[in-house]
Each structure stands twice: as C-alpha cells, then as structure tokens.
Image (tube, rainbow, N blue to C red):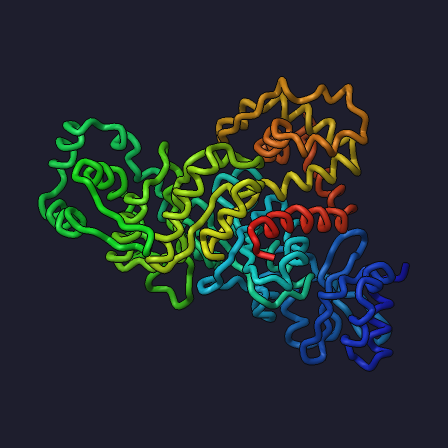
Length: 511
C-alpha cells in the first residue's frame, strides 16, 4: 500500500486534475489511504482526508490563503508542501468557512427527515452512504444535554463530527443539527450559538402532569385561579366551537376536558412562545423548532394536541414539527409495545392535526419500532420526522462483539453490573435474568445478543457509563479500545448502519 504523499505526486502527474483520480473510487483508499469522495480542489489547493500514522487527517496540498488558515504539520513533497491537519474542532471551523456544504441547514420543506444521533461521532459516514440518493433529509448532528453529559462530548464536538463526515463523503445535499430535548433558555442559546439549526424544545418541566388526574371539582378550583382575562380568551376560542381538521376529524372540547388541558399545557405553551421570541424569531437564519410534549405520564389526546398547536401558532411561533406522546410504549432500542390497532387510530388523528396546521408529526425514541413504521409512513402521508440515536450505538456494539469479543465480554459484564445506575436516566423493561450467561456463550454467539430485547436494552442505556469508566490508573477502561476497534473495522460499521437504518426506511416506505 502506498501513502497519501504518493497520491499527491500522482495528482501532480495528472496536471492537477482531481476528477481523474476520483474515478478510481475505493481503490484510492486501499492503495493510498485516501477517502475518494473527500478529494476536492479549490483554486490551486487540493483537499482530502487520508490515513496518516493510522489516524484520519485532513491533508491540504498547495499553499495559499486557504492553506494558511488550517493548523497542522507541514510535510515536504518534492518542491511543494502539504499540511497534515488534525480533524479537530479548530480546523473544522475553518473547514466550514471554506466549504459551505459542511455547515448544517434547516430542513424546513423536506417531507421526510430523520434524526441520526451519533453518540460516538463515527456513524455519520454510514448514514450518508445510505441516504445520499434517497428523498430523506438527515439530521446528522443530534444530541441531548443528557447524552452530552453521559458521553463527555460538547455541541462543538457533535457538529464537528458531522461536518467532517459530510466532507469525507463529499455529501453536498444538506444536513441538519438538532439540539435535542433542550429544557432551559441557556441550553437553547448554547445550541444556537454553536450553529445548530434545529431546537427540540422539551417542555416537560412546564407540563403539569398532576392536573390530568384531577377530579372535576379540583380542576374547576384550579382553573378558577387562572387570570380572568386568560380564561375568557381561551373559552371564547375553544368552548362551544367545532374545528374541522379534515374530512375525517372534527375537534370539539368538553368543558371539563378543556379545563384540564389548559391546566396541563398552558404553561408549556407560554414557555415555548418565550423561547421562540427571545432566541429564534430574530435570527438571520432559519431554525427548525420542534415542540416536544411527549414527556408526559399519559398519551396526548387529539384535543390536547390541537390546543397546543393552535396556541403556539396564535402566539406567532413557526413550528417545523411537534412530538406528541403516543399510546403504548416507545422504549429504547426495541420494537413498539402496545395495541397496534389503537395506535393506528390515534396516530392517524395526530397526523391529520399536523397536516392541518402545516408541520410534520415527530416520533421520538423511533429506533427499531418496526411494527408501527408502516403505519407512520402511510398515515402521515409521507411527512414525518423520526428520531433515532441509541440504535446506532448498538450497531457499533454488534461490530465489537463480532470483531473484538474479548472487549465485548468485558463491556457486557460491566453493563449488567451497573444497570441500576443507568436506569436513573432511562426507562426500560429489560430483565437481566433473561440474558444468557455470557460465560456459557461462544464468541460466534455474541453478536446475536444484539438481536435480543433484554441484552439490547442493557447495552443501550449503559453507553455513558461504559464510555466514562476508568481503570485505577486513570486510563479509560473501554473508551479507547471501543474507538480503536470501530476505526479498524470502519467499513464493516458503515455497512451495518446501512443495513439497519435502511430497514427502518424501507418499513417506513421512505425508500
């Protein structure tokens, strides 16, 4: 195998025409360690990603103003010089200033969008290879504050990983960046300051779940304590009215039901309006706002959904998507749990309300919900946003189980031993007793654990503990070896992601 330096010499021999080299496709990676789709020329400077000393680096070949902007180590190649640049946040900022397609953009107007949370920062190339020729807009950078804390990453890290992936794959069709499940003004501001183009506003701390179970008398008393002007305004708008959502759906509000809805959701709506007006409305760029009301104890009724959407729009908020709480359970990493017939009926109404107001319905914890994917694809009319995250981590775990069984065995035992700690952050129904004793399994049987619900969920929610665990000497117990393994078997990981997320899109009728 040659080196990227020889690739530069070949480039010169081709009179500085990168297209003649890119035609060699994957041969460039096998022969020179160069990622073929990353090869790009700007003025007289050549850019590409290559393997240097077993690490991916950005190579900038040909001096000039752009060359000087990147920081790195200079290497002589004949009479010319190249710069070997670390793929870090500093250089990624320069990359985004030079190549506009590496900046995230709004996904407003795209009917099918999918959030592809990447907890390790390694999955996006696999996702891009899947969707590059599909009518699916990818939100490649998607991370919640909880995930940042558990992985030890920052929003800058998350965005940089997506931008580098886009450059590596030569993907110029646009991608999004979602500050997921943000709860406070400071969190929203932080995501926007880092250039994120989507805000998923988690209003759970402003939703009064207790009000849903109040008796009629208790609800009346609580409701009467609201300002009279607010009560009169809302009653004038909703009580005694019929709202035709579609030919199949008409929304009306009973008095008792209406009062409970106001008590449960009115504060959340006010919070969302304040966030929109204070942080999003005045921006000189388009930002997608998703209203999340799925963090409730009970399913969102059509009336509650209609009320929240109507009040947001009356408040001047431009919504790109809204996430209700659907019936049944959308647990992490496993299929839908619940009454499929009931889900079909209720999802249809939610989709019709979203269509009525002009935004997409959003499905959270959407990974692996294969039973209801056909329903979502059909009843939404092919207009939805689906969030996935942990399933991409699980495909990484599958690769580790196959290629580095010793590491997987240690990860598995640690995950089982520390499951109760992880349950503080995630709700799952996994039963450890149903997981086979790993000491009785052959290495060849280990990847199959990622096909079983109980072991999937245990490994799913312990990712943060695994990534942050340290040995007595302060070194990481798993993290470095996880990255080393996945980098070594990069192609296999990309292929696994293409198969698994591809199955999602197929069941959703997105491909």
